[in-house]
Length: 264
Figure 1 (cartoon, rainbow, N blue to C red):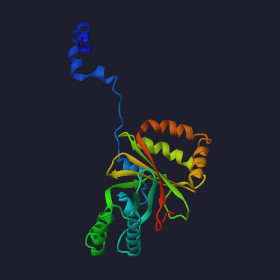
Figure 2: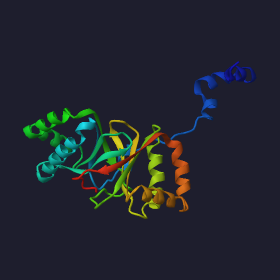
Figure 3: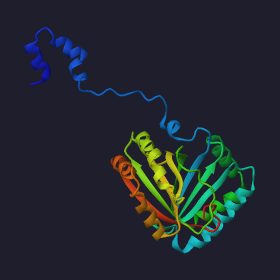
Figure 4: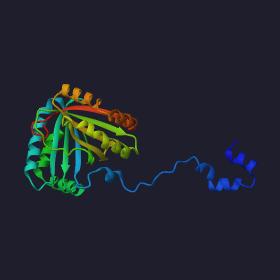
């Protein structure tokens, strides 16, 4: 026995208007504001057009050291060649998390045009093609993502070591990226005391609605103390309270920088 039938009996001349206009149902449907821009434009740094690429390479255990040496040599050559509008921000091996894994973070100055230019030149670079052929023999699997940088996070710049790095990766519920950004724009101030904040990124291509927060610590004990101290700051607990419901899954990697990484 539907609401429409009930209203037609009580108000016999009004049920047609009810069915056609849906005024009764509209009382219970929340009105939503129309988004005026893509979340990538709202959350990223408008003063730059940098694009980031995150690479995850799962390496055969017996090949990891050879892989690291080969990758470092190619990265060094690309850094020295001004024709390529890209640079390695950091390179690591996973210590705790997926074992025998290499993680690389690249920056493309100029956004998607710079990425396209770089890939076109590399595909015509015989030395690089030979490198990729040799590297493929050492890999079990690989994947990558294209990322933008949150506007309120620190710019990832080279830093001296020794440090360990933690990458905390969050897979968010679709539609919650703006809310996540709003909360973390306030929360990041609670995590600056020991210069631990390195960079914050959100995905554009690859696994979507994924966020990566990159942190640096002297060692695991320093990590524990730094994270615990955040809970003593008024406001941090509220930030955690409001962001946890936005998360579908999360992962932590502890990583060691490779010898040639700008982030040591």
